[in-house]
Length: 186
Image (cartoon, one colour):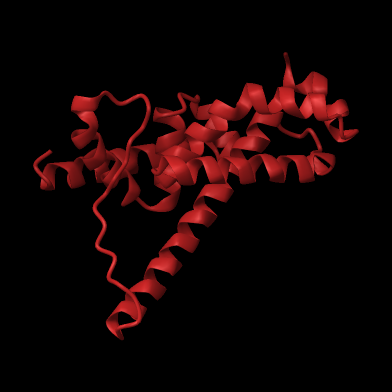
């Protein structure tokens, strides 16, 4: 099924067309979100928010990009917004714990991606922690290229930047990851 063939049905509110879209794109959306939020339960919640946003906004989709590109943008935006909100919540909890109103949250990094074998999870956690520490634009670029397997052209279209900018972001992301992983004796 080509997504472009069902856009008129989606805009008309056809629930069957929306179900088909969800079925065909749920892995793409979930994996994109999971690469950013790095928590399976939270990724499921954010992925649901993405599809709710798609359902509510499909009538405004102008078709200037592929439907999947538009959905990647929504998924990235939702995941990054979730991360920002989580940082704010952690900050509020930290302040509350300092003044004795809440327990301290010193949680270790727990990241489990379905594609990572059991014996590799510890190494994967270190790698994903390093990826998480990248600047936002480098992190998103890296994840789209490496975990989603998109081309430089597709990433440029999703992020609305030039291919040269994607190449530059990827180069800086690799350099930063190399430094971080070398310093942690990975």
